[in-house]
Image (cartoon, rainbow, N blue to C red; front, side):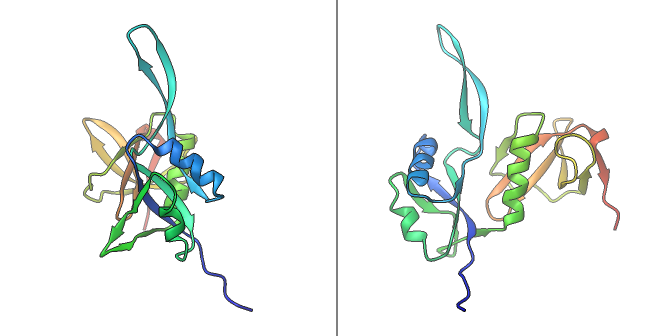
Amino acid sequence: MKDEVQKRWYAVYVAPKAEKKVSERFSQNLINHYLPTKKVIRQWSDRKKEVIVPVINGYIFVNIKDTEFRKILDVYGAIAFVSENKLPVAIPDYQIDRLKSMVKYADEQVDFSMEEFIPGEMVKIIKGPLEGIMVELIDLNGKHKVIVRLDGFGCALTTVPMSFIERLTS
């Protein structure tokens, strides 16, 4: 029996402000993908409205075989893969799973930063909807935040009360 080619996660850069449209096109083409979104309140001159916007502007994650790169780039609005040395960079499944959990269960708004942070102490969240995941702890502007790092791509951030975390023991 022939070994099946493994599907992996990749980040795809998409046209500006086109994340939701490209996500729809991926769905129409039966492409397994993930577009992390959040609800925000937008203010217009005459009203306020709750809208759903991407957590990470300009990017969608796709779960594909390495033989399907061309198929992705053939979708209108998909520009390029996040690459290193001209090769698309695979993102480990566990990192996408952590990002999905953070976006789905975080009590606070999840923000995203392309900035590379200096690695901090690894901690485990012991309470709340993110209970059980291990994350990197940083301190920004006096607020305690946790990071889910996506290798070669960036970091997702959310605030977690200090009482919800514990130091990992070696």
